[in-house]
Image (cartoon, rainbow, N blue to C red; front, side, top):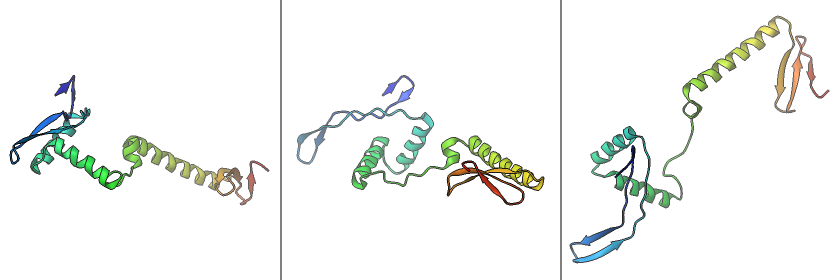
Length: 137
């Protein structure tokens, strides 16, 4: 079923006919709509189909695994590059390099350098002679 441009996974109320016992079993299921990227859906379908599964069966397996594990069936981690985007991670890296180079150049040229003491949780100036002057002094 399609709603606009979004593809949906449809799990509907169904009646399953049991051929062995020749009786009808009512399976109460919820209706789920999931919006996904069309390429992502197609790739997942291809992989699941190669395993002899449908996307609906794959979702059932995932949900049962969540229940069995009492959480996600895989470790969740994030990579800053993925989370923020490679461009932002690259900009942060360049920024850090420029700050490090500037501090080094200022020390060589004899200027005081503004730093932060993580233990005292306080900014300070470090002078070329090694003296440190904290902001709260």
